[in-house]
Length: 349
Image 1 (cartoon, rainbow, N blue to C red):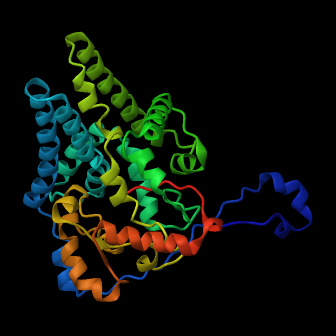
Image 2 (image 1 turned 90 degrees about the horizontal axis):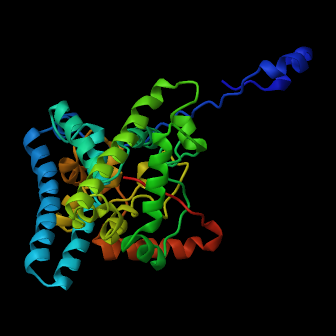
Image 3 (image 1 turned 90 degrees about the vertical axis):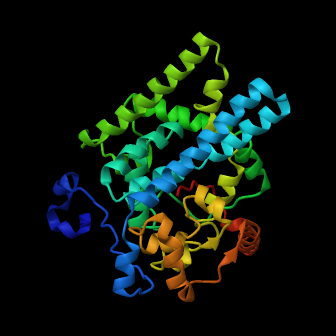
């Protein structure tokens, strides 16, 4: 509870330096579309079979494009190899969505399987899944209520040059990922959000993310060393650098989640966006196009969100159908908001 110095009485000058001001976190009473209890219970059922289909299916797509690049490199024309490398990057860009879902612990019924696959996808995506989990927990609890949620900050604006900047070869993402990983590996936490999640007076909280940052550096360093030793220069391009090119499709999917919507509202229908996608793209995106439903009921596995959508869509805003339609909707909102409402933002799953 926050104590104002003026409330301390005549002793305030002598006691002021002992007074620690702490901001009270808001108690947000979120609106959730009512769902019959028996239906909600069924939707929360997790399945190792469906979890395997989703996770191994996604990793299978990643492995298939990797194998296609290698085959084309030895047997095909250069233009085909370059195109397949770019396609491989398009798949790799969605690693964060897999890490996100596995981090929720809802993909597999067996908890150990969630815990087993999450670091695999995190390694392939250069993701510190531990810092992400800490951030994302607060994002769900305080969605778009700064400063308790600084994972996504509104308002934000995206233009064509952002897609070109991040969707082809994403040098800003590469630089930020490398600098943040090296910084965390050295045990340095900085910025309001990191120091909120990992306070300096709780050093034990910092041990695991620091260790994982070091594992990322060591693991990808070994891949680079092996490629230099054996002359396999394509190996780091396909594994270590894959998250940093070809991400245009991920960019178009992932940045729909909150852009153009409201902040400081207790209604997920006003701060999250749902739209439909082609089934295969939705699969790559781990079904996060049903983002309002995911925030309303985050314990529902991603592969059941379409069923949840059928139960609640009567209570949701109009649902755009496809990427083109949803971005036309976003463009219209951004035009109405105007340049005075804009500032930069980062967004996660």
